Image 1 (cartoon, rainbow, N blue to C red):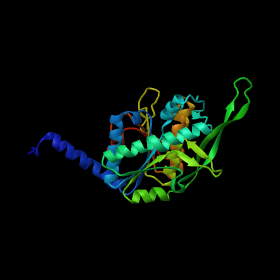
Image 2: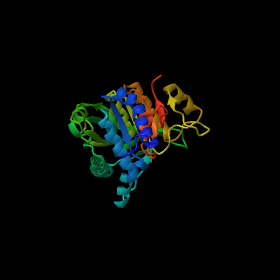
Image 3: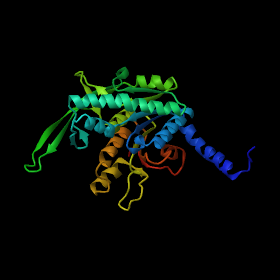
Image 4: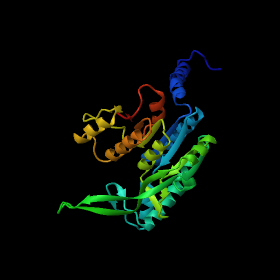
Length: 299
């Protein structure tokens, strides 16, 4: 029999008591989690992620998972001898690439995540934007500046889309049935074509449509860092604009933060950029005073 005065046991009990106010605050609310990057390729981190999601569901929070899969799509295209081209970080997607993207995202990756959640003791249902009329996409175009002439020209990205309309009823039905929706970023357009959507963009749009309490973007960095390399824990859109202008925020972090700002301005309570390589980072962010990433909320 364990000793009730054992400091390790007492510390565990204290951790649960400390977490209680946060559990009460978020009970019945929705968290949208964008899952991707290196965390997805590491079995140990994938298992930790699945356990976190199952725990959230067990304490009365409704997690919704939106996943990416860019590296896996790239690997499959390479195997097939298809060359990838990118414009502003978005893969130019022809008909063949769109088919491969759907196969990899809605098939292999989606069901793998469903399997991880099942092994952690949860019930998940895999779907894409096509299922239940969840997302209707519109085609994305980008303007690119010619470095020689400085003239802007419109670049056709092919079957790359962004969410136009979202009907959340299928997510709400799945969540109410005690299951965790796992969503692949694929959706049909009004034109009947299938579009590949950036997973961050998909997650942000779904978080806004659900009026989620939190949008979590799990990334391969610890969050937004200042010029000294220190983590910035709390940002508003006005801060982000200033940090972008002075060069503190650059590269791939810019579109992630734009997604966060759009989400919080369109109905999501707050967004968090979080390091998916840290074990149980989501639980540290939600259930502790200190947090673990960069929180973004509206001005």
